[in-house]
Length: 290
Image (cartoon, rainbow, N blue to C red; front, side, top):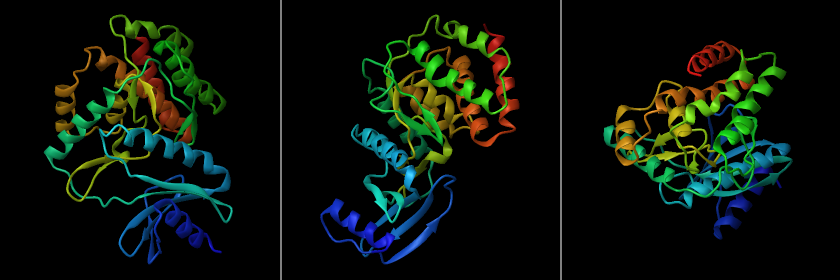
């Protein structure tokens, strides 16, 4: 049995109805896994495939998509099945045709993200670890956000950067000074997308928003908002609608640099320069506030 024959069987079993691949179309945009559109007689699916050892990452992604979907707040591609076939790992998702957004579309995304962030639990972290890009993301449960962010987010990336040849200046001082950014702000453990930038948000053929490639956990909602700004930002209508639905604390303007330093260091650890120079500049900016 071929790889795609096994995929047909897996989809048919998951849906409890026959599915046959009529055509396959390679898709661009993924930098980690190979992506293919599976055309069926009535329904299409999105297939990701990678090496056999990559299966745990697909299972993490599937779990994150299921966590988001269960909230009913914001659309994600529905996960269908995952597993191994012919020594390859795979993840099959609902295929969502993309369209063009307008101001209303962006505002809808802002409101829906605010609704997602209103979903809270008593502790920071999540039920399982996951990955952001190819980098492990530890989600051990914690009652202390500063400790969680210091140990499992920023500190973790700093240690990884050192192994990769870049030692952020005065990083110990920055980690010790984290309480300075939370003197009047107590974040709640909100459900997060975890990797929300323009490449992981889109709009369907009717202009309705959906998000994908999440790495969920419960943390400060500002981290999601901060990363939307890291690569140029979303449409202004998105931020206005979010702010109207769930106003941000005044200190966000400083903390967004702190939160985006995590992503900047992760990009250095994944791709190298020039993210080391950017991380150094961000670190110095943050140290000036301590």
